[in-house]
Length: 276
Image (cartoon, rainbow, N blue to C red):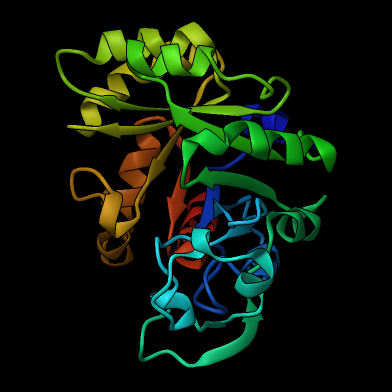
């Protein structure tokens, strides 16, 4: 099934996005973390993309290699051979985590691993890589299985998007912040480009819920992060582990049908329990 068709399916349960892969079982953003996400039965895996000094695309979140690879260097200043030779620390890294046999993967390796098995959210650490990443996706014939995303909730963001070429044919997710008093204008901006999904932030969950009917009517699904560092209004993974109905359940009741989490196994168990 195509990514767009899966997200548009009205009969599906809430989709689970494994943030940087299922990293409780492997180093984040590694091929092993993606394999763990596939084994876990999650819908989507999110990975972070950077570009090496010699122009190759690879997967890493941080601006330096210290947390995950134990060296204080800027990866964009290194060649792909140097980068991919580095072993990754377990889980979310840091000095207390042991090194593993996993190494930093290239985008090409990630897409081959995911091919036909899981959808992929491509988080570009530099939005100027849009055209380069899109070209790689098309070269590999992966247009139906990935998304590209960027801010799309303001006139300035829309102007930037209109200047980008080469991304036609790849599912696009608009990102926007819905605030009371300007939520209608934000929704209009999103509606003007008709993405298949909107990654939403909000000042109050009710503000976003109020826009859900018009977005749903236009075929736009809502993606929200319950990741502790970037969640909105206290709707965090940590809180959800203790009170899932109050966090994940409330989000779903508000029209959110895609949740990115660092606790994909717990979210899956919760969704399955609700279906019984």
